[in-house]
Amino acid sequence: SQYDVYSTHTAQIDSYFNHFAPLNSYFSDSELADFYPVAVKYLRDPKTGNLAAIPRNMDARVQYYRSDIYQEKGLKPAETWEELVDVGLKLTGNGHYGLVVPGQGDPAQRTFSDLLWQAGGDWVDQANKPAFNSEAGIKALTFYR
Image 1 (tube, rainbow, N blue to C red):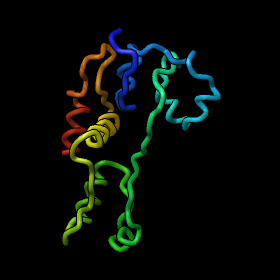
Image 2: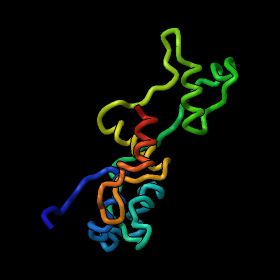
Image 3: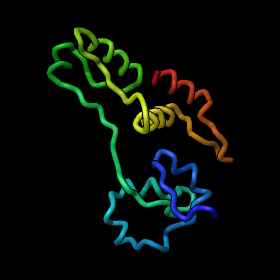
Image 4: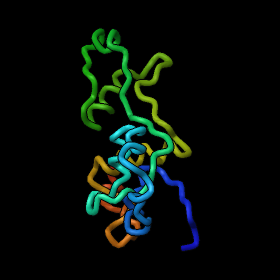
């Protein structure tokens, strides 16, 4: 191939499983133990178990909220997209925003990826053709905007 090393985000790694050479022979189990197990899990092809990449950084998406304000307003942490919008609207006003999300750059793409997967979609199909212009992709992007 033209490239020996390629850097991508975990959000797209499944798109490349068919294209990357397995790395299993390059890393022992003890070497992989230095990484968070969940990070390595998502870099393995679930069909073959082959290691397609190694982690270089990791993040987690969480919902932070002030429990005192939620209690005062009789709210509970959102568990669905609809609840997230509802809670955000109830907390918006007087110079405060009920929800803040990334709006540009890589963080925005990662947020869209999360929404796309939650809606049952994916970036590419089994033939590696773009698949995000789907019902799930439109639902995710409509919500995100």
